[in-house]
Length: 143
Image (spheres, rainbow, N blue to C red):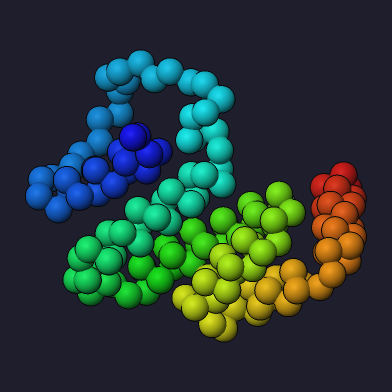
């Protein structure tokens, strides 16, 4: 069964044994459809996180060779992005999980802690806060 993260995972594992490069010209035709992973930001973020987690579990030296700060930053950004996307979908329990996980990588980030606290509030309050944020952003971009 094909899973959307298989290609990313394959090339990541391949890069441990062979040099990988980038060719900036089209070599194949890519069929676009509604199920493309690139059209679903949440699925893409979760797939990226799954692949990075797997790579770190299978090769503990990655933390050292890439640098702990770089790996922590990548995991933080993936978790934060997935949390935001779940928050936009009003899936508060999943958002909380991702925000809590992101907090492990950047404990001192006050904005993240604010998000964690905010989504602990009752659902109607969170929805009202989201609505207020949209109005403020709209007003600021219109001025």
